[in-house]
Image 1: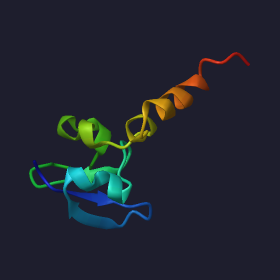
Image 2 (image 1 turned 180 degrees about the vertical axis):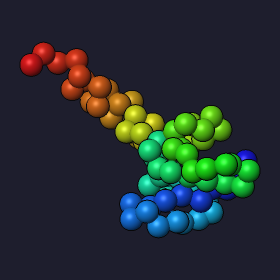
Image 3 (image 1 turned 60 degrees about the vertical axis):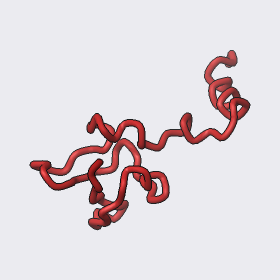
Image 4 (image 1 turned 45 degrees about the vertical axis):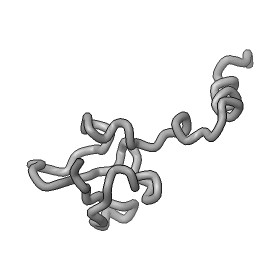
Length: 78
C-alpha cells in the first residue's frame, strides 16, 4: 500500500500519510491525493485502493444504534 500526499483545506501539500491514517487527517472522498507513480492529483474517492479508507458518516458511526438514527431521518415522513 502506498503512502499519499494530500492537499489540506488551504490547498497546502501535506504528508505523506498511510491510508490507515486518513481519518486522523480528515481526508475524505473529495480530498486531492497523490503518490509516486500517479500522473496527477486525484480525488481520494476515485482511487480503488483507497475506497475502504475514505471517511463517511456511515462508516464512522460507532454503533448500530447510531447508524439507525442516521438513516431514520431519511425514512420518516415530512
